Length: 415
Image (cartoon, rainbow, N blue to C red):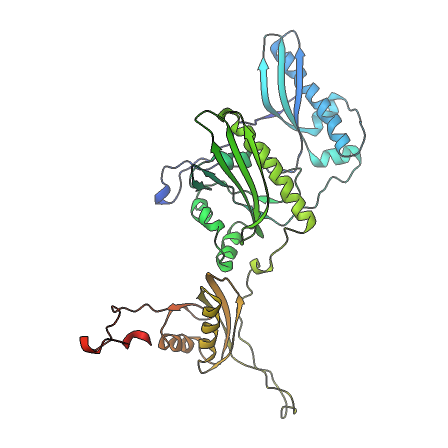
């Protein structure tokens, strides 16, 4: 008797549990990926089998689907058409996917998918079936419908389409969040437009990824129940770079799932092509920053030879600061370099319009550097070798200075 695990393609597996955040209490948003294994998949296998009973017809349909799927798979792998017995195929098939089926008293009509275990197929054909995969890519599926954008704030059809997608035949190593827990807070439409490398580095590290892919769909309905038009875009990286796009259309809302599944397949092909051509590559700015370590003074004997400069000594302090414009970057660097004891100050991670990171070499206690920054009108958050600075806002109305009467207002607060 053939035993199989049956996967219903149209029904995603739901994660139990409520969201942990108060603003999402009671919202059932989680959709776990149906399958993230590396199995070979052959979909769309049509069978029409008649037998004495419904059970016999269904079993015969599955066996026929296995044989037809095996023939397609061997041709795809370039191994010709190698026939195997039903018993041998039972050992290679990991599951049967029921896409559509009709069961009668003596007849079975269905469209099935067949998943083959990759390692066993390689052993049976004598082929190396391993594939080179990309670095882990965090997937943020953004859907726009009715002018509103969503990712994981609520369960969307686009999220469910990516959860149904089987990644075994893709060279992209997708990291697909389920949408539960903090996913809706960390991964939202606003995050896709953020340029802060330090923030992106923290978010990506939370999911064990090395970069980010952003598949976008914009849905437009002609009229209720009428045609649905989907505009698809492939984007990647913290800069939300555009890779390409296309448009698909279905005659009615009943075909929305098929529309989105087709969009997922084409976007996956786009991402794979971008990996092959180098359009999607590793981003060094997303690598974790090395821990800040004090620079130890060099031990020298005798005088310093002529023409050489004594090595700089001090403590490395990582400073995060607001960098709205290029002039703001230059001014902040100049202010840091003007503090006594600062030997060097240079931006190591630039994010115009966001928060940049500066490396400061300071000859002294970092607490003294923080006090000097406060004396120059900065707010200082944090302590030790990693701090965050921003300009302190004026607490007085414009035109009124500390300790001055109404007649002394003018230029008091500019310092």
